[in-house]
Image (cartoon, rainbow, N blue to C red; front, side, top):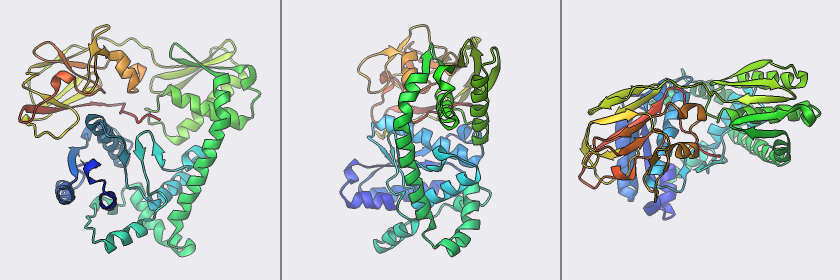
Length: 429
């Protein structure tokens, strides 16, 4: 709430859109959304309420990770739907301090100890160097009303447990400002990482090449690099291959880097390493080839949908809301039933089939659009599109609804959500 009031106080109300994501993890979550809505109405700020995809939450590595994935998925969808310039979040130095502390306990390296990124893609976190106490003082002075999420006190969640068990003893030793000091350390490490990237980028260009979607590292020259540099380059290459969509745990990524480095140094032909997410690495001649999954996908039968409910298309789940009147508020996945009547057909795209999402001036091949939004190559062959009863394409997985699905105020609409059991949209770097 403080971020809303600060932005409003400097005259940004007409440009703001406040998004409340209801994770439905506690009984009062809907009431909290209504509280935020009333505050926005009082300040003249546009408000959007969205429900987190429960399937994404369930597929996370624990509720915390799943809720975070579902939250950002919705935020990115809404950002695209309303053509927002950026996303602001109110993470504080306390959040940063807790993150750095947890990653220290997990054995993170320089990359992980940078903590929460202050800026990545369109996401900005302006308060990572401001303590929670400072914000609370400002809110108190300006009579800002707030609510408390009861899940923040649930010590079954790791972050809450760390906060409840360690905040007081660390404060007794280092003072109440310890999170701010941790946050400063994370900022210094982020600067160091950026400086390191300046020197590593030429090495990436020299030693790592791409060939038909595979990544290649030649032994010549690479093996002469210091081991610490080799591991950094190897880690970056593996992450590129996985498209940063695979939820590889820290210790497993370290093992993969070590195994790939040893394999390249030894140069044993035919040796192979499973990188997860359908990707492998193996030696051929004098180079290590990291391969994305290219397994043929068996055709999935088309699925007909007639209304509200969920439908499965391979590993994709398509959720359709109950029909309702369109109020004019932009919402991701909104489709006009007036122009796109049911029943619909969920199917594979045809070779070369073209699509025109909201806001695009012309059509483009669907597979090229999927490449632009970061849908991994290994998923594209099994990803669906939706055809209306009229025969035109109205939706495609991971893309905005078609221009033809645009609704006028008062039209009957439904909200359609695509989710995948092993993938979520990623924020571009």
